[in-house]
Image (cartoon, rainbow, N blue to C red; front, top):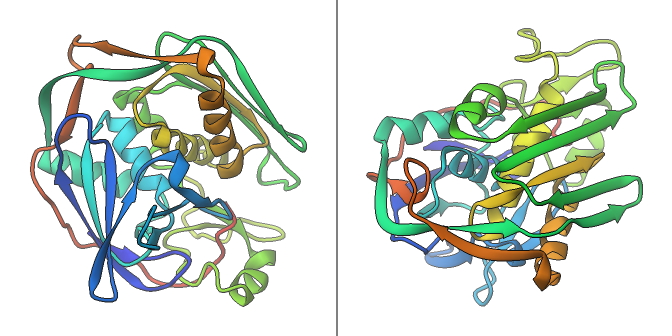
Length: 303
């Protein structure tokens, strides 16, 4: 896949490779004539300003804006994949996870023979960050209860409560795009951010209207995108989560903080294995793929 890095503005290519059971998500970042390894793990998160950034443990490489790709992988039930990135940022595509979902489904998935591992939440864990609250509870499945509250007549307070399965992810979450406010554009550009953002990959919110001519994909697209981001950020747990994640006024920082808090409380979780089908075994892409897309330039990204 080829596209634009939403913050760098640079063209980036991406290839997903099949991986063996229990290897999880691993990024291999090419740059400066070398390849660096970046684990898809919450402990590798190095920055959470406007996007999720992962950094390698030893070689100093990093990769940004990983959340939409990880959401597509976790949303479709893909547990193991090697991700080759020619650049330091995953391409933004159309601002949603849908292009990644379409590309993965085009090549298909391969079920592996090993039993699937889950992280099972055993007791509630809560994190507070100012007026933001994140909580994770025991639940027989993976469920999100996400609430946002923006001082904007186009957003306001929105809430989404959904069991996340491949079916619901494709139909309710994956098409929701990143969003930002036009009033923040100059400040973002001055800080070297959102250089690749455009009306092709961002819902731009003006003072009196949604700038994008096509409007919104859902009336509550903003909270759906925040829920999609949560799927991607929680994919860094190391295995699928069996639990209910609830957040209020949260974002990447809160999502990551809840994972850290969960793992810090060893009696709050356990690892279980199951061989039940169809979604209980490790799956990986059935073949390598690199499908070309294009994305233009302009607009903010304050998600």
